[in-house]
Length: 250
Ligand code: PGA
Figure 1 (cartoon, protein in one colour):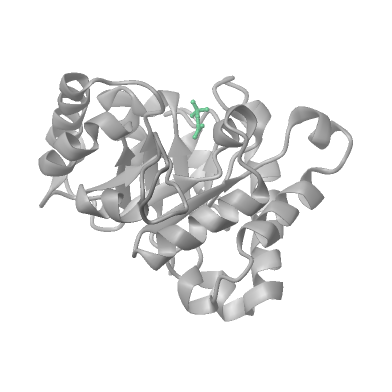
Figure 2: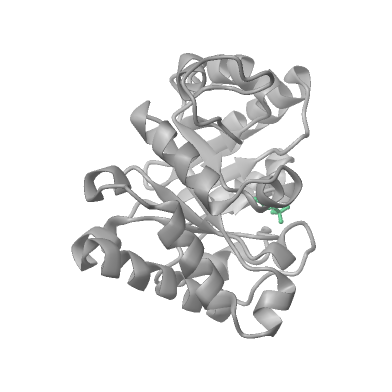
């Protein structure tokens, strides 16, 4: 049984005060969420404050990015244990915005993922194809290739702490969601790849989130799919009412 995981990726939004207000709204409406995991990923500048606010609540803290080194002369970078230090449990790696805007490659994503695991952070590794790649029939090869490359030198035991997120690039921030059937097909292909790499028993335990314009009105159908185990939510995680509705998917 895989516990569903709903994560909000705030991207480059929310000051400390705005983040606190959002989290206060979430905590007020959360209720009992014992059967699902809820994560918020604020920008670095708000991590400490939000970490304090969610301590002892059902909300878990995640960061949006991490560097692969543990310390040193890396101006502007943040190390995995620094994220642990401010209360993070999760960290997103390989988001398509990091790959496209900040030059992440499968190799750097793999290094960041392994660094996160080395310091007891749970990585949420994002994979996803572009529109031209989908239109030319390459989506599955691209995505499963990203999964393989991102998991190089990751053991089966370590994999238990990894969450994958399938985020088709063309669906991110566009309002254009993959159909539940297309998303399910890709999630099944990702799980088949994990089964090839680690065996079926391990593959069945790994959670695979869908991301890309997840909204209150499409979350129930997406979450009803066999291999969709959660959502990574951008825009709709910035308001308490819409994120709460997503958290409370049926
Ligand atoms: P979106 O973003 O929900 O705004 O499409 C998802 C993401 O980038 O993780």
